[in-house]
Image (cartoon, rainbow, N blue to C red; front, side):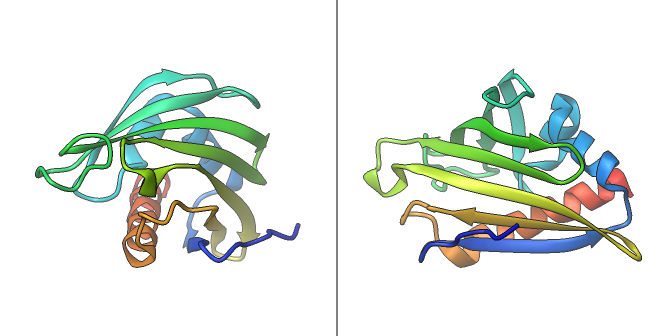
Length: 155
């Protein structure tokens, strides 16, 4: 599969000592997803969850201190639609941030792929069509942090 990238694409990857099956499950089980998705220091809660193509979820991400949020001073609210759920291979999520700031407008595509390797599974996250208000270094650090939490949960 070839992933088209635009100028505002961000990515992170990690080899995790778990099977693609277990990793895929962590994306489609609401309790598991809420436990690892938010970067370190943040918390996540799911307001709705429908794990099927065309379904999706609403997640509230809370910051430990005010002043960092896109939706409110201490939170980001995201609406996510599953564009593709290819078990154990790939997940494509279409993400919209709830914000009054036009710098966060638009729909970001987050593609996560699972590639078996000798030591487990290489998980690759690529976000494209990223809103201009999201700094690449911060976003990539956040994705890497979430992947660390995913590894802790599944290894």
